[in-house]
Length: 192
Image: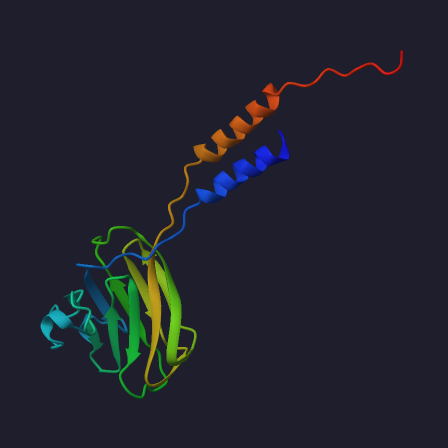
């Protein structure tokens, strides 16, 4: 096979590669816990009141405020329809272990594949996000140092589609067939 043909096949393969995209959260219903407790998270749908079921709320369609406050009022959590999540320090945050869990209950258009931190303002350290299943993830903030009203933002992305195993095999078979069927020029005998 000529080098330019192989380059064309490789370019085609690269052009068809798939990448994860942010998950649209519009109309999402989120259930959350804080430090392992459902009572530790207060949702917008319940006006942030400590009542049974307050740890479940719908995404704010106006995207004008936070969906959750922690019951100790240390953090606000805002989810954007575009797939972003921002955790905001609601004042001075004492050092300690802070964990949150968010569950979308199978209501998203795609499985969650990654939580990628995209920015921090007034916060330093490394937040840790752990995927628990296709619809939920945990967030650990114990190693983050916060200034007053600091924030960290992450993107919730879909799992990248995995190409079927047959696709690479078919491409290789096609390349082998092209190589096998190419015609060779007959060699001329040297000298006379």
